[in-house]
View 1 (cartoon, rainbow, N blue to C red):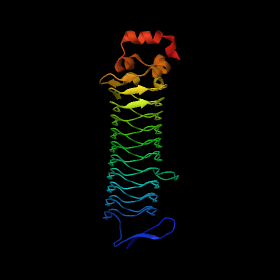
View 2: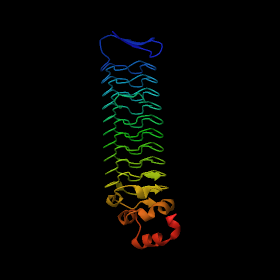
View 3: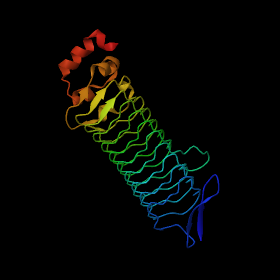
View 4: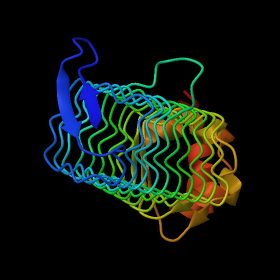
Length: 277
């Protein structure tokens, strides 16, 4: 008999015949505040389940189906959601604050339209995950691994992505307003139709990143990004005057021509003293 208890009161929340929760059928399970530390739930059916405030430290949730569930304010430190189906799951305010434990593993998981705003998931792995339309606003994703992830139409506004790895990630039509990408690895990232308004990119590596109708506005440290001369331009993009005023002197000609500026336009802009301030 498997017994799951409330992490504070010790009250019984679930009793299940057998000796494991792996691959268990638990749709609509009420496991708010559950103590699931280190438990093996791989392959379980937890659709529409309530795991709010649950303790999931070091739990194995690889391959679970948690579509439509709620994991708000849970502790996910060291948990594995590798290959899980997490479409539409609410992850608001989840935490990986415990020290000395492994980061959360979301690699290859389906997080389509998942809600992860204001969550602390620094150092977590989202490699090859699907995050189409996901909400990651104000999330702490410093040092997170998004290599090969699909972030099409995701909202990463005001997220902390310092030193994150996004090589080969797809950010088509993504919102990157006020995002902190300083020191991030953006090599080969797809930025078609993405909006970078007020993004901080000093030290970010944009070599071979794809720009196409990308909107770049208020990015005063654009000239401090690396690899701009190696960026690829499939069509012209938008670069606003505020960005040019701060960054024009340090922007490579290859990048400026790639976004659509003619050489004579660049020369006129460089000669205009107001643009250097």
